[in-house]
Amino acid sequence: MTGAGTARAEVVLARLQLLVTRKLDGLLQGDYAGLLPGPGSEAGESREYRPGDDVRRMDWPVTARTTMPHVRRTVADRELETWMAIDLSASLDFGTARYLKSDLVLAAATAMAHLTVRGGNRIGAVVGTGSGLTVRSERAPFWKRRRKTVEQPPEQAPVVRLPARPGRKEAQGLLRAIARTEIRPGRADLGELIDMLNRPPRRRGVAVVVSDFLAPVESWSRPVRKLGVRHDVLAIEVVDPRELELPDVGVLTLADPETGSLHEVHTGDASLRARYAEAAGQQRGEIARALRAAGAAHLRLRTDTDWLLDMVRFVAAQRHARTRGTTR
Image (tube, rainbow, N blue to C red; front, side):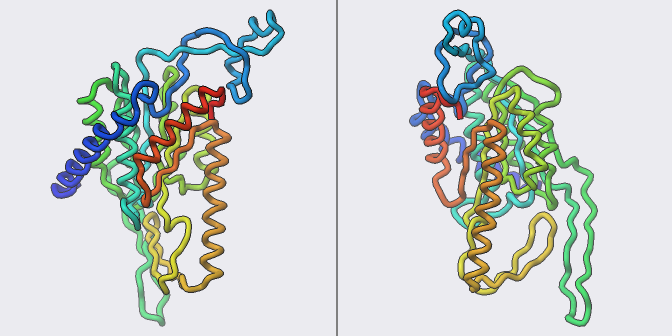
């Protein structure tokens, strides 16, 4: 990253940390001190089963004695380890509203670090971006076909692992490394990025995946399910309104940030806009279903809304669901 880019990253990160400290501390007190409060791994008391409880926590001896289904409550460990999979593909370097999607990725990572680093908890991350390999279609005279050029990928690895360490100073260093990550052309392998959270095997903790999840669902759904077997998973989906519907602004020339290909779209066609919105709705529905099937908590952040307020509402809904016996 250039010197100007590094300076901008430092300024943005400083503002984010100030915003999170001032507002999140005031809104999330006491039981709200965790964005995704995990149930822990130490055995606690038993209680009667309620619809929505995890059947893996059934207390069979008590169930047999009382002839009523019971589940074993668990006590959270004093030290929690949180790992984040941060997707910084080229598609995240986009935004048509108040923020870029990459800004929301950094905001989500900052909030997670602020909420989980207390009490000696550790937080780490794996950060993935494009490989730098793109196929660009160059404009040519009408009597010639468009020719494609391939750029060679840089030597830098597309995935960086930042070890989990305790302390606010270490968390700030982790966030600084994420903020300085240069978003490169190409698509990151989201499935491989998520699978890195399973290697090496760790004790039960919290796993957070921050992405726009625009990669094919089948490429990342299985790693998320595998991650959810051992850890509490939070999926933070970053969305821009133009990915859900198109405005009527005439002819647009759109560039795919991950492949470099160009497409001309006539947005004045009402039927085209309707088909686009329908396809976008189906895509987001598939993403939500895959995350729900994996048992992951799902938080959607939009570039045209107050991300901090959305995060607080999510925490409140999660706590309400848990107190009523429903985990998701």
